[in-house]
Length: 131
Image 1: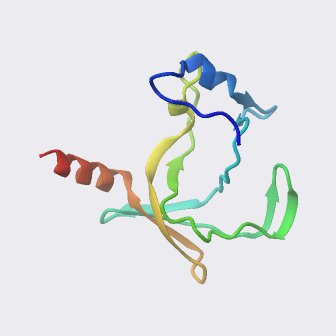
Image 2: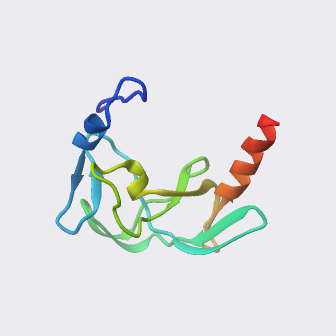
């Protein structure tokens, strides 16, 4: 499915060629399927990041309105990120679109709460392994 990229064999122009920008400025990755959801950020504290997500009465760009949208089953291990404030580089870079916020670990359906390990905690763990 789609094209694979390797950091030592793919030029930035190859990656940019796989991006398209919609009329409203949203970047789309051509040739890959993934689900981006918009969870409402709550807080980052004690090494965790939390937010709220409801899959009821949602509007998808390609599938339209759904009374019951995608479920977050299997979201554990998925990247959590903040949207960009603005695109800053030419040519565009993936860093312009995503600011890493953490890694998802659970979704509480009853509370509609997404929980993940914060980026700061992950960096602390990695730095601890280096020492």
